[in-house]
Image 1 (cartoon, rainbow, N blue to C red):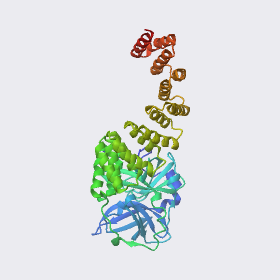
Image 2: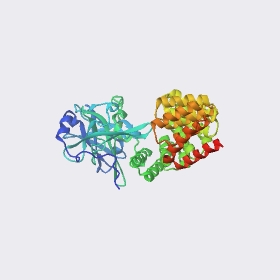
Image 3: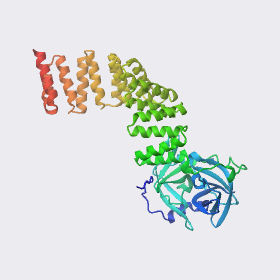
Length: 472
């Protein structure tokens, strides 16, 4: 089965006159990269682009990993590579220093300004006499880990295109095309150009020779397996995703990203105990990673371990005080343990962060209700309804809170409003009947019974029994 992460919506990957026209000023800045083994044999061919006219070149790390010599082909010129200015295996990019002067460099753009659906162009070497150009749009921004993101484009990236440039419609580079292979499958995405910004000029005069930079086969690194796992996850191949992350953990068990992603994959597979183990390792390595603390809390919750979930949720809220969801889940854990006072405190924090969240207001109301603080519950439910006037569950609980305080007329008004919003709301009709009965209006209670007969005969029968039992 072929795993292709790009949603190929455009034409086949051939040279496009329109695309070349928009990239004409950068065309000669995109180059081919040829690597050689110790016997002088060409072993890998990839792409790259010139970012400085004195021969500073960007490409993928995996294109040049574990090779003896590197050359670039810029137009009709073959230039040797003196060494490295920058190596970032985590982002699969390198900056090389090649020979030559007065070369044509590309213009570097800002990937943070590109919008989903915006036109993009890929340009790279596919092994032919000319560069290949394809066009498409930015179709998404994918999260590899909470600290690593890649771009998803519809422009096809051919074999040999890894390390090539992805341009916006202004002709500025916004990403580095990346093609990884696994079991004959092509895993394609784009590294945002931000990973090299600030690095292009910082290494001037500090060229490290090819022999002095320790390199390794990229497929033997944890980073490679991290990207492979993410790629499988994006196409819902969960078992392969787990296997890839397990391999990444085997290679480097102390990289929090591998543990975190393994935990996420286990969690998505419903393997909560395994997820807990992986997240605990991620937290051990990086205690201040709020996402790992939060997800650990979720895994404990879904494993039915609310007492254990409290600590991670509290840590997530401490690290990221603006995280409303951490407080909401913390409140839920407290309330399921019947620690309502603490639950109220957590929900109040969630409401403070986002007062227009009707679910947070309703959760606060439920915590007040369960702790017997009905007046406070009423206020919280009313706030929830003010945010979302058609919030049925809030009406139901607000009416119940009024009932707890024997405020029958107010309860009747609430359920009437619920019925106006949804005339076939059987629960609201049932509760209307109950409160009419409690208010001493048997006739109106019977009217609700008649309506309920067509909505929920079982509830209608119960209401009828209560009406005549009250009469007796």
